[in-house]
Image: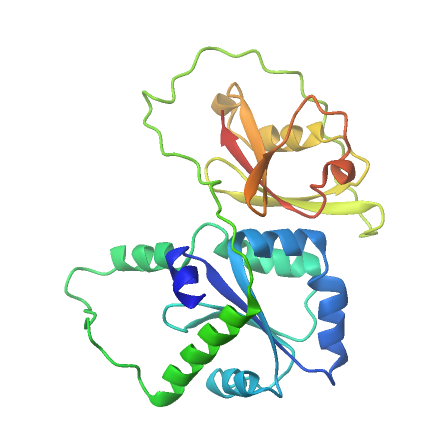
Length: 273
């Protein structure tokens, strides 16, 4: 499973929990059971949950020097490097915000971007270098064994937009629909009537906004176009939602609300058609 996760270029999302800590039960009940969190994790991560009183859990706690349980870590499956960590109860909306930086690419993409920032010869990787110590090697084996035993299926994320040249981007004039006016963003934070939607624009900018769960899905287009430059507002946008195994394209002509369409508290990608 570890080899597969590396080949699929996905991050490891590790949850070290304790059966005696109420925060662990809250994570299971409120965060991991949240539909938006579950879909985001299945589409972009490999999730490993382990108790702190098991052999593997003790190794994770010692290696990463975890003093507070529960803990949630984003780990590079190839090197074992801890990229981010959060301790205690993490609310679903908060966790989704924390995970946004890891949705643009996996460990391989991250390493490639770092390599471009260093001049050639500034570092080298020995092809047959050994682990720093036996502890690290044992941890890697524990991660691999536990992930393999977990039997989780991975889903490919084919939501990456192709890179086009200005010539290829030239399209025939398209008559865009008249988008409904964007109402004032709801306040108050009542999650029974409100939801939060994250949107990634074609230029890579990531935004978040509160909507009413009963708002029509067309308001997503209204919000996107309100954030674009004037020169870009004549191009048609395609909105997609990443779900396990595929990308769900949102239909502008739909009469569904945000809640009915399943996009409440989720991440949406906006690309040019």
